[in-house]
Length: 140
Length: 163
Image (cartoon, rainbow over all chains, first blue to last red):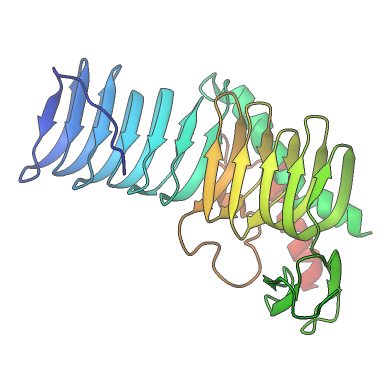
């Protein structure tokens, strides 16, 4: 199964490392160990196959190969490889899910996904109208 | 035509009962729920608002196609628009022109760049699990405010039903 390529100058949290707290960085980072907390970056984050990450991610590009529990806000894209197990909400303009990946959560994937609450509320209304109104109206 | 020709195993999208039919069968009657089950691949290129859209085959929603309904299919390709909960026994592919508003449960999901997907997603091997598809709960929506109109409407319906 192909993994997401990293860059040569990435920060690595090794498989035997555990980190709790808030983390911010520039550039790229790969997590192979355990992380619990909040990550904020304008760069790229890769959650490796052996990683167990929980918390909030606010990054540009999130590549998820391992286990992740929490919310992701990515300004560019989110990629799930076949080994990814993700539970939580994703908000991003682009999402790639490889076959075999597990994803359970609320997803907002749209070019306007990050453009504020106004657009989001109209999308929410559409979901709710569709779920509650449209099928019921058609049954009548 | 030989009765021992190529056959395929299907599952009723309503009652989940297994049915075996010929590969040429376009529709059949489910022996579990005694309702018609469509088994022919289909392309939707117009506007369809229905109570339910069930087809135990591959369904493609073309660029100009719109489905407003609960959708239960074997696999789904969305190039147009779908509003409503989707349950696919195999994969769902959302092309770059596709828009999906609703909960999605499938074994595999592919989303092209530029596609729109808003809703609760359950994707992975072994999914969707048995039973009816989940109704979209109010809690799945990231709440902008605690008292949104649809919440009140749903609660009002529930209260009316209880009386």
